Amino acid sequence: MTLTTFPSVNKHRAFETISVIGLGYIGLPTAAAFASRQKKVIGVDINQRAVDIINRGGVHIVEPELEELVKKAVDEGFLEAVTAPRPADAFLIAVPTPFKDGHQPDLDYVEQAVNALAPVLKKGDLIILESTSPVGATEQMADWLAALRPDLCFPQQDAAAPDVNIAYCPERVLPGKVMVELIKNDRVIGGMTRECSARASELYNIFLLGECVVTNSRTAEMCKLTENSFRDVNIAFANELSLICDVQGINVWELIRLANRHPRVNILQPGPGVGGHCIAVDPWFIVSQHPSLARLIHTARVVNDAKPFWVVDKVKAAVADCLASTGLRAAEVKIACFGLAFKPNIDDLRESPAVHVAELIADWHAGETWVVEPNVPHLPPALENKVKLQSLEFALQQADVLVMLVDHAVFKLIPGQQIKQDWIVDTKGVWR
Image (tube, rainbow, N blue to C red):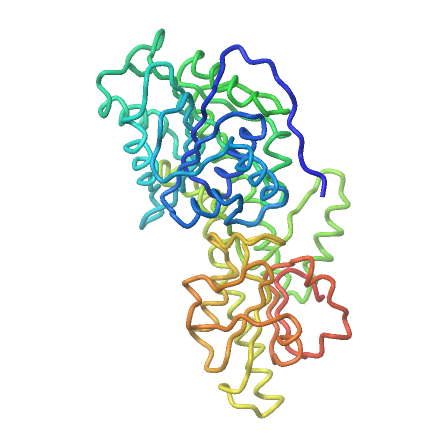
């Protein structure tokens, strides 16, 4: 395997120690990127298991190239994981930002990170929020810090000469290609002041090949939300087309392929819904702040969130056909769901519609519900004691109804002659 290499850069000021708070799908790759440039990186996570794995040179998530980089960084002494912040020159916050009831943004993890790092702050430090956040979150973070450390001056108190610089810089990487896109993609740098942006740009230029595009923090926050809302709206269009085509007896994948031959049309692919921490969550941040204005964005969320229930209705119809044709009892019918991740060829189950569909089927179905997911060794909590994790071969041989939810590469390689079942619900067009 060829590992990503990081270019040399000229630095105006030295960042000798960098702290990354939150060692998940974004934080750990970011920590590895800085450590690969021989910077001392202190990774912080409240998950003791993740900390222990990293300190042994391992990783607790699946991402190409990441484990090799982490092992090298740990072996050479440039990366250490801890459960509480230590002094550093720069702090990057990459913690989850889910939503609460009513789809309201939940910044509790950000606030917890701020409370934890505040005691170790010193004059000259830089703090960057990377977590996807509603507009105004960076300013809120700065206010929390000012209340916790009245001995330090922050940008909202003195824009000309703050003791601590603060910026917002969202990630924009594709799971499965994080270590490539992390260094190649442009970064939007939203500093609270010009100096904050400049300092943040200096930090990322330690490993970045892409361009640092400078703006203010509120625009940077809205930029991240806009990018993911754009994709959500386009996926909703494809998902809505799939509903209409099903009624019309039209193959939606053929339709989209033909329509996309138009030089100015690029329709995305339909599926069982929308998952992942970004696209399934971020549009709600805009809707929550502007419920009367974000009508299209809200409608897209409703369309995509409803798709899993439509899939389950198709499964119910397939089971009914199976019962009518075979004479089996409902409790004897075995349903196999293929895929749990929110997208192909990764182990990330966050907000996955496939998990939701499998759970809905298991709650309804009187017989056994199986799942085939080659990228995870264990079932997520939502499916424990509800479904069984089975091998691909066993499911193909023993299941009565097949439900394609995630088009993993291994599923696409299944020879057609191995699919003997008459009852198939294919949400990804793999077996069409």
